[in-house]
Amino acid sequence: VQLQASGGGLMQTGGSLRLSCTASGRTFSAMGWFRQAPGKEREFVAARRRSDNNMFYANSVKGRFTISRDRDSAKNTLYLQMNSLQPEDTAVYYCAASTVPGIILSRIWNGDSYDYWGQGTLVTVSS
Image (cartoon, rainbow, N blue to C red):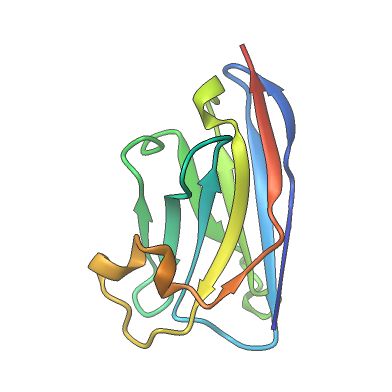
């Protein structure tokens, strides 16, 4: 199983970036994004649950970030469209995938529920 994340970079405040994460090897009950800013703990950003195609967002990104999947389901690719970027969005963003069957809401926020992680991609937002 591999998760390949890409799309990070440097952006000015108010700009947009799109991150991609392609999974290979199997399907997952959920895929999502976490981030870790310098000196801070890792935090949940957004996730998609496969069973019902529900999307979940952290309050800090709701309304600005959108998670989606590739229309070609065979590609098993997850996107994170990030709009209205703010300096506080600066972090390393990690793609993650869970094999927890029927993953419930209380666990989808928790990084411990995810079995596989991508290598991380750096997003820097300048003020």
